Length: 137
Image 1 (cartoon, one colour):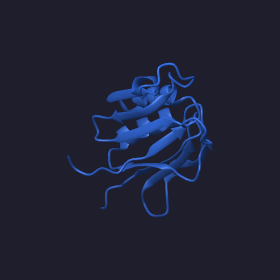
Image 2 (image 1 turned 30 degrees about the horizontal axis):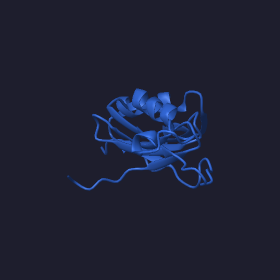
Image 3 (image 1 turned 30 degrees about the vertical axis):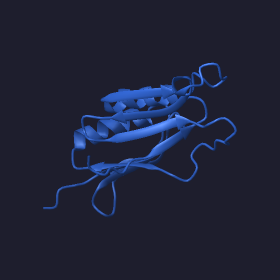
Image 4 (image 1 turned 90 degrees about the vertical axis):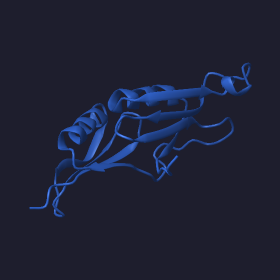
């Protein structure tokens, strides 16, 4: 298996809903394991997500979990998830779905470096950057 670089997002109790949302956005296969699945079926957090992994047809990998019991959760703690490439239609489709119900801090438009770029925060408080590489001509 090749090495991969992907974000791992910690959620404050809504990891299942968030990961299912990202599956709707990107497609692919979502595997969810709860704390109950890992030998804690009677614990109060048994139905919370201990580990989730989404693998998409485009080769994206996204992992996440609910914060473990006793660990503080801070939404948006100094990270962004970046999507980039040259497939304009595909990336605009992701942008539309991710920004729906969220907030846009930088509209998706041509930037001074020549690419189309935007920044948004989705409805789960996760910041995203989308960069569409424009052909050099």
